[in-house]
Amino acid sequence: MFEVLDYPFMQRALLAALLIGAAAPAVGIYLVQRRQALMGDGIGHVALTGVALGFLFNTSPVWMAVAVSAVGAVAMELLRSSGLARGDIALAMLFYGGMAGGVMIINLAPGGSTANLTSYLWGSVTTVSPADITAILWLSAFVLLISLGLRRQLFAVCQDEEFARVTGLPVRALNLLLAVTAAATVTVAMRVVGLLLVSALMVIPVVAAQQATRGFAMTLAAAIGFGVLVSLSGTVTSYYADVPPGATIVLIALSLFALASLLALPLARRRARRALPAQAPAPAPEPAARP
Amino acid sequence: MEPVISLTGVTAELGGRPVLRGVDLTVRPGEVVALLGANGSGKSTAVRATVGQVPVSGGELRMFGTAVHRFRDWRRLGYVPQRSTATGGVPATLREVVSAGRLARRGLRPLGRADRAAVDRALDLVGLADRAGDSVDALSGGQHQRVLIARALAGEPELLVLDEPLAGVDLASQAILADTLRAQLDRGATVLLVLHELGPLRQLIDRAVVLAHGRVERVVERPGDVGDGVAPLPEESACHPPPANGPRPGGWEVPPGRGPHDPLGRAVGPTLQTGIL
Image 1 (cartoon, rainbow over the protein chains, first blue to last red):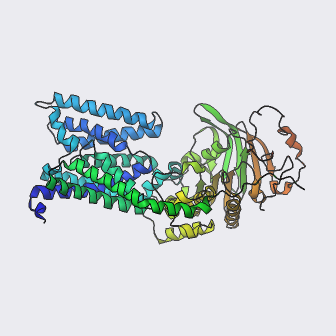
Image 2 (image 1 turned 135 degrees about the horizontal axis):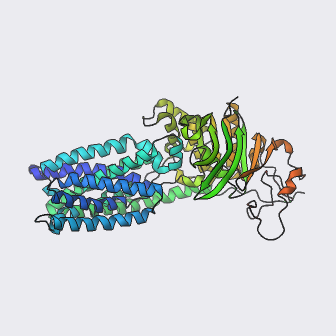
């Protein structure tokens, strides 16, 4: 039954899926909290330019993608916090620039063509090399260390930035750290689900988890559990059914989200009923004529 | 004694528009000072400048004797921003939100047992200890405001700065807020708060400072002693009564269905404004 584990390439694939399934929602939860669910997509498009630069300079595409997408994520954060550009417009520019830059540069690379980008666009977890595994291991360890170790601080910054600044937290540094962490996550996940579907693994497990949870720590734990579940089961399914792993993982995640929302419906109704007496506004001090 | 907060001729701009045009204000230890004024009078900007969130373009602003841009001792301050700023796309429990108030003391270090005890005490102070594990999304406006005050109290600050703590708060929560503030005063805290009207906090306030167009218009000592009667202060005719027709420039915001009040909460018309205290 575990013949899937007999092949070294599948051992690597499952290890990569496990690490990414845990790391992606751990960062994604902060982006969802700050209502920047699409930021992962923006970074993914920029990472494409990094991959192409890796081909052009004949260096590791993964580490080049880490560097370029970190620069892109920091630029996006600086634009957001300075208020120079609206968040969605900064994001749109990054989408177009990253995509066009990637296609242009890969065609400048000797012998390069857009075909080289395909495995990064759609992911190919079953072709992960031992060198890739080392990179994935380091990057996901960094991502989990930041997103779990600083969870109270990052929670405070994403929940209420002004309050966080007044508590004396280094808010700008934490925001930049979060941006770099998100960039690292995207480049880790691109080998598994592909750059175009990266954000799905950062967002869907979080949204599925919060259908049933009341608190942040609970949502974080459940999202990591869901992330690991969908990425492992998607990789195994893709092996047996001979279907693309990235798309399988995302479709399983979406099914999980649908199931969670369906199961949470009665729960939500019960909570709404219970909250109703508390929600009812107390009568405002109405003007009343004095006798 | 050294003032906790002192503003001397403070000016500030928002988007190139002058909002504070030379504000003088002193808050001494143990005092409760209320900032009142119409929308756009600069009262919120004044407190946000005090907590370092709006840059001061002129004059001098000191916190505990230190120029505000050099002030780093944030654990001495508990800040309650306007309620609209605290929203997130992920559920959070009351305990999680209130725990953020301990970060002024812990910084980047993890929270310990003493921090959890302080969070429990703060939730208890605002009467929400039994709902510590609930999601903040399930709270009413008044309960949510109490959570934000608990978050500020969790750090056990010497100075509380509250921006419109009574906005959108039902009467029951207003009474709890007044009790909470009184308990803080009893332990020696200093309070600066922005209000639309004094309401149930009237008796607690040492000084009411009325701002208009970015300047201090007038100062009323112990507004609670002035009484609740219809007899206006002599200077009151300067801004009241309102003209019968047309919007008043810089006029007080009077919620529909409520009688006209001046900002100190004295009923101008025949209205019931005795409140809870």
